[in-house]
Length: 287
Image (cartoon, rainbow, N blue to C red; front, side):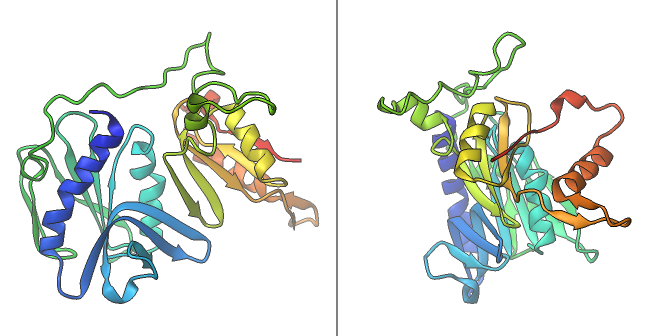
């Protein structure tokens, strides 16, 4: 079973127990589009929300849901447990579940907002275990029962490995010349059609996939004047973010200061002393 099908099976397996547990004034939707703010739109695998928060379409939600559920992939795992978790926390999503499918026995990690408006890990429910939760409704979580029909042997996922000898072609073939037709392989793996998921975070488009410098350059041409940032080493699963272009801000001594310069300062402080500096993001500013 490939990962896309596995992902669909896992989400579908959650629909019935969540739907049976939800309260009369609640609704659930798969593939829900969450409008968390004017500049932030996120797509989650499963959401539970109040009926009065339903948007115009069947799977759109206005504001933070009561529960957001993400099923990890090789591309999204680090995002779901890091920046995506921080995003949901910042916008006040009370409950957040991550179904981690790292191996043949998925586990469910449950985060809940505390009185300090920060997520705490409420439970980590492994295969063969059961945990009863109360938010956003009473429900018993037992991965081996919910995902009982999951094949015991999952087909190996296609991993993208980098080496010192091969780095520029790890994420797929080049796009053909402008006079040539685009073939399926490049269409499915180059930006933007190769994206696993697309979201908008604080006015910045975020594309999930396995990207390299070629995708950064393509996106930079599509977003002139903005900065396109690869959020992990080229070819590795993760995200590519389109940031606002450099803007000048008055400094304490009257000197203009670039927004991107400030962002780089934040990243410098965030790096641990032992972290490999070679893993810094790749950025391209479109002309």
